[in-house]
Length: 181
Image (cartoon, rainbow, N blue to C red):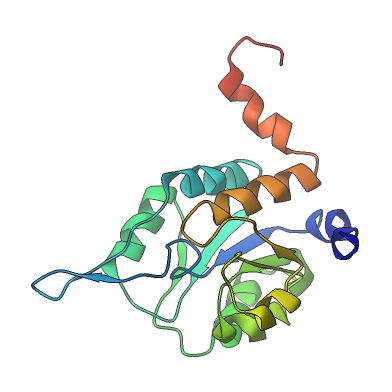
């Protein structure tokens, strides 16, 4: 598709990827226990994709409007230390994050799924959304995954990012053991 032709130019500069949670790292559904605890399901393969990004030297962050202990647990599992929850204005949180990390907006990607993510989409260097996002968000994204949120969309983006930078083979080679291909 024509609009993705400049993707490698934009992705080579990426040093930080920030993710929304509900609808991106999860399928967006909330499950409540009988005691009122909210539960979320995270895709393990998405986590592997995020680890591949970290291994390639890309910093990861989470910026989400909601608060949930499960987000901190998942971030801890993945070694993500930049977690901002309960954020009313994601653009402000994004700006604070890139300032703290001394990263230019063009060197940051953001993956979101709904209208509250648009201000960050318009600020970051590379915006990504999921297949089941609203049409308006898709129009502002540099990449739209084929997979839905919480269903492999993060893994798809992570692999696309590494592939576009020519780093996917190097990041996956170690899993092949002694094999050469």
